[in-house]
Length: 167
Length: 384
Image (cartoon, rainbow over all chains, first blue to last red; front, top):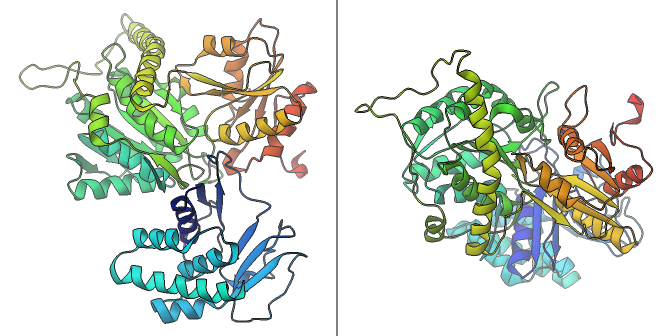
């Protein structure tokens, strides 16, 4: 949910309307959860869950196989998958572009904990072009303070540059 | 200025600016973030309020009742089982004419246990004497709190109010909200001026024994105050619009109803999804509109009849079920339109958090136009 909230916040900072919400599950760390983000030039009124995403982020690759994470995606869609395997291609629908990133390692190196929200946010920004680096950094600095903000910005920028090179 | 925040946080921020003097609440999902935020604000001295921690919702509302009777502006928030536990106190608050404002983070009632959204909780307190307002989005949720205090504390009204917003769907959603400054809220909402209050120098009793010679008159007076609350809401909503540019003078609000053949009627966050669905159906040449009900109590029967004049079919979406006789809103819309010749169909939807999509709204319009209704929509086929 934190990643969804930060992406929606950064998109809002970038000048569009946005909405982020969890899949209304019981929130506890480690349980499989979904969260959704919409952004639009107009106020977002729709409240249903998202069934045909343009973009997906898979935070935990061990879910793949148990859950059809690509469900509803169409050609032209973009997926960002946190995995150390660079040749990842299992079950990807035709026309969906997959970016892989070892966000867990980056998060461990930059933050000291395997919490990948901000790293994947950087990857999302670079892969989709929906969020600029400036609103992204602004979102992170309003959510985190002091050295935590610096570390998260660095993790996001590292992912942004990694994917930016590949995109 | 629009700011990006969680719905629950928007509520806590606006409640803070309404300057409650006493807050008492018991945390329960999905209301929790509101009261956690407020507890923190009180601890940080951002609000000059007493935050009374209690062991149950029954005690929370009882503490609020006493504090209100002592002349304080009072706030609470709850949902679902918590509201059920307050049932008895709710009737006492209204009967003693205490203008308490309470946020309801709408959630289904057990059994079976469900933390997810429908509107069964507040609907089940229909006859308690509380005003009930339903919000479509987090902006409206925040704004309705200011309007609620204004209406409730009006000496011609003196009734409590629920400000209802859908659990998780709004409480946990982050979206842009514009919050007025403290000065702007102060300009709209003056300090609480109690009509009467507990005072050791001039003793009064509230909620005394009423024999059969007098009890009915008390209920009559609450009902009359409810009826007057329509005009008070219109006035407070208009004043809000004049000051903040967002007009809430309507007890109901029409969306693309001009020339509509079929009208959907709904309350709460589903109205946003319905508006998008209406736009799509209109693009396909279908004459469909929405009537949103903002105040369920008092029920705007005349306003509904006026707004739906000219439509031939009405599809009411009910996120509740009055078991044995259909949805609560549908029953009342049928009463409001009695004798009009308009066909009214009721659809029970979204109980216990079942997701509703634009295509479901279109399917319901199809059903209404075929004359099929008064049914649960979207059931699993194995029960059919």
